[in-house]
Length: 301
Image (cartoon, rainbow, N blue to C red; front, side, top):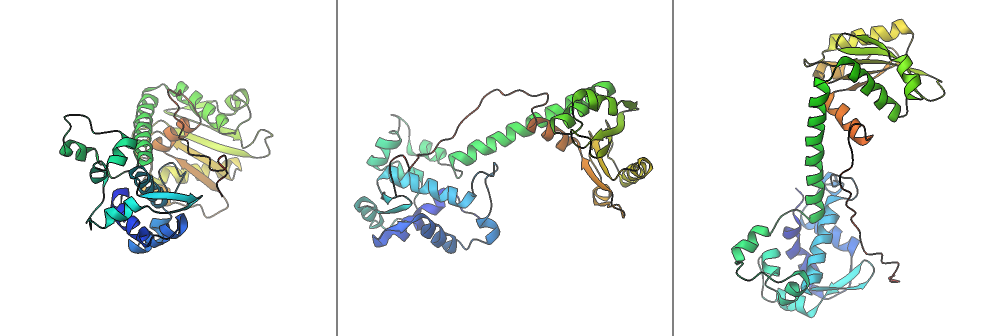
């Protein structure tokens, strides 16, 4: 299990206790060995996929130590413990966390002093296991999940004609069918609680994709997928997309045609995610940029 950034703090500082210069990669490797992390854990990414979780947590531990004056940068990706850091280790701490760091004057000056009347226990409640980036990304995921649920709820309440239009627009936004006009001509045969038709795979129409969409509440089972594959064979098509507002059974998802037919299953959850990814029926409310120091600007080696 990947330790939180506060658990990383004590062994991190102990590694630097020799007073020598250490690199980021070397320290990360020693900490990984200390915590017996597996390859899968070392390769785990933050929700956004922008950075790996463990190095990110080590970086935040390092950042808090810099605020406390316990470590100093020598050059880019290279640092060592300070005299203040050595003196702190001489107290033989059994742990290091934000609550303890907030008692250090240098940390208070850089991170903001404890508000008057705020007790240590109040401060301790603010000590969290996740890094600020993880908190932001997890919050984003929760917002996105709630948005997807709201989208799916509205789709299920829409009319078959509206659902038809939505599917056409989504496929075009994803790069299929050429234009809305072209795609609309192809997917226009409305059936009960769904649509069926053929759409261009690309703007030039070099290949086609058979589309079946079901605005259903009940789950879609294997028999429906087998019927879909049969419909593809009847159309002489080898590629198909089955879209539903509900979900697929395990047997449906495991079914694989024995011929060259390729099918993609999109359930309600995935449909909502695609709509969010391609900005369909959603609008941007806020944009937050996370920035880091550009070491090249300062000429760090």
